[in-house]
Image (cartoon, rainbow over all chains, first blue to last red; front, side, top):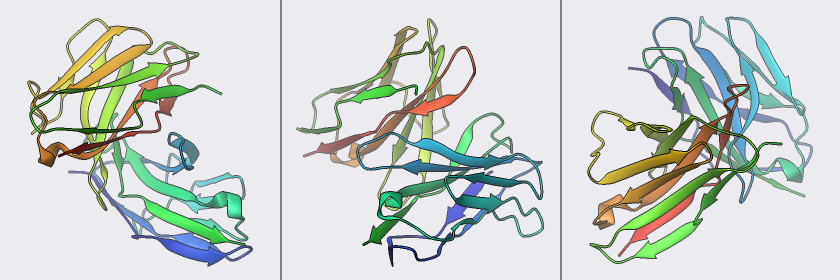
Length: 113
Length: 115
């Protein structure tokens, strides 16, 4: 079946540091890939997505590129802010599970001033 | 933006009691809502798909008699954990699909602790 693996947190870094959260997936077919973010006390929100190989999703300074050859969708941001402290979830849709989302375990990021 | 209200945000109950969790779409209608659970350091796992006006569709391995889902209106789905036991302690999250644009919005989750 489909699966998503992302690095365990927490990831703690200083403001303006570079952030990378690794995400790899296993799926049949050609899934769409997503990053969701959950800020404290709020629901998950779609951060960015990519629907085919080599697509780059971007939003709020975050980027992720759909790499089919390495089955990866790593999230990056060049200069994080305290307000980026949140839990980040990698997910896919469109593999064996059809239209259902398959999530990774989430990575908590804490940015210190 | 669209908001999904999930209530309560946390609940502690005694073993053997039932707990109801509500999921409301506040400014949009949703024919489809989803219920997930997450154990510590594990993925969000889809439990069931809730369809307005019809029976929920449960994922393999999820006991439908234990996790009762009701989706009686286009803005409300409820998950009732019946005769809860400590192994049901988990983080439960709902999501709702906007009827008009099919976008997905999530609630903030419910932490259930069964003593």
